[in-house]
Image (cartoon, rainbow, N blue to C red; front, side, top):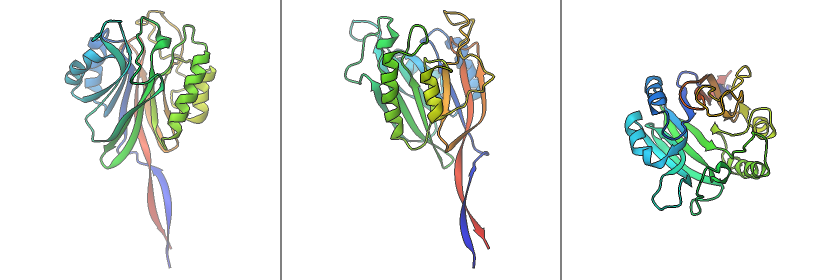
Length: 258
């Protein structure tokens, strides 16, 4: 008589290639677009994207995109909006947005106050060679000095509630909260922080208006179902560094035991 045991391992032959980057609106197209075309990722997660630029970015990158509005830039109607955008040409099983501050019916007017921007997750469930992945894009609440605020704590609670309804995922974005502070570290207690410990900053010291801040504020977090096989933090693309990662997913195989 024989029996079957379930053996779990990571599928390392078919990783999902991810790029996440805060592009600082339309200031750095000549920097990051050639980089994306060279690296040929499966999915791209961008923050601080202008809605008006979506057709151009789709054509330049060669991928379909979905945009989530977080704020209008001016009082006047039909003025540019700013938000999240995720691009992929892989088959999409499901894609949706959910706000943890504000909502789609009450989009704030920015006026330069980043703490007044709505905050959302853009969830993309996609398929690569029969393997299903869930990748989430976000741009978390900003504070002027990098220190936790009451609003950040409220928004983190709401974000964690949204994430609790998603069984397994890869969470990427600009978290506007430095590693080593309570907001970032709370996420790192619940999910795996995959930015290597030797990385001391994800801010580009030459392109960011504040210079060399030496802060890790961008991240890629994973639930246990996922493994980041390789990761690079790359500068000279925007005022933030890009995160380039290869992600694998666990697969369960039935193994026969005598």
